[in-house]
Image (cartoon, rainbow, N blue to C red; front, side, top):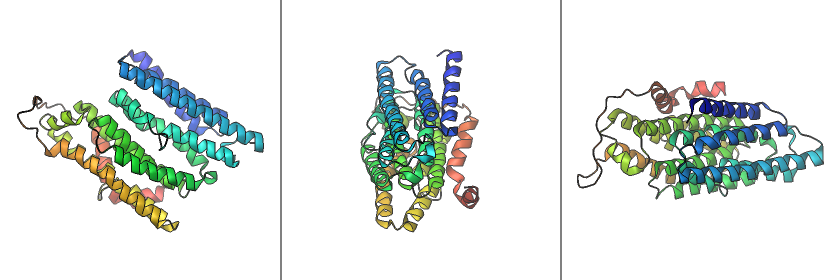
Length: 346
């Protein structure tokens, strides 16, 4: 892709995100989301492969439908209350439609079908943007309207997202699809807590972004698109594979790694809100996603393919690990000990 074009699309992404997260008016927020959608489409379809074109088309149709619902919800609220302010969303029907619209934008169950397909058709770097940066504006809208959302509906969607995200990721062999289902599962954890402790949901999102960025950039550096390629990458870059193992375990939420912090705090908050059954259910369902993280980790470090396979061993290159991967991986693994400092900032 032309560097100037790439710069324009990246700048538009930043502009769209900034407009949405800093606006108080529904029309401005909607405009920001539309700019975001239009800016990411060329980045999805830049390879001109039929699968990439299909992914871009699916993404456009889904996001257009979600944006229309969001506009409809804000107009309904303005019709009944005379308020266009984002924080003044009080009409119950508007709240319901808004929750559905944002669930479609995020890819929460039962509106999750588009996300794995779109991620599978995109390059890894665009996949990283779709899994992190593109989720930020909808999450901030949820954050701003959290006091008026229906917590029962969000809890149901969250538990289903965690269950289906884990369940459907079990038999995948494509790394992008596995990361898509991982994203759906993590969104369940954010959605369940957003009405009770919005700041905690944002903390979860920041840490999820950190860990997902580390995994995507590592896989992009190793050129890994499926599990069979991941199995042969150990000989190519042993250090990167070893750190990928730890980052994946952190994403699974195992102590003493960074990913354990948000899960621990969310379970604690749910117990305070007298929801022990929901806390137990979501904890047990996260074991499903732990299984496929362990499978990825096993493929990346512990297995060497048998010599009878058609895969050639990769050359061991002494290419230095990029600074951003090193920083992101370190943060993804080692933030748990300084959790008291993080909590005082929050």
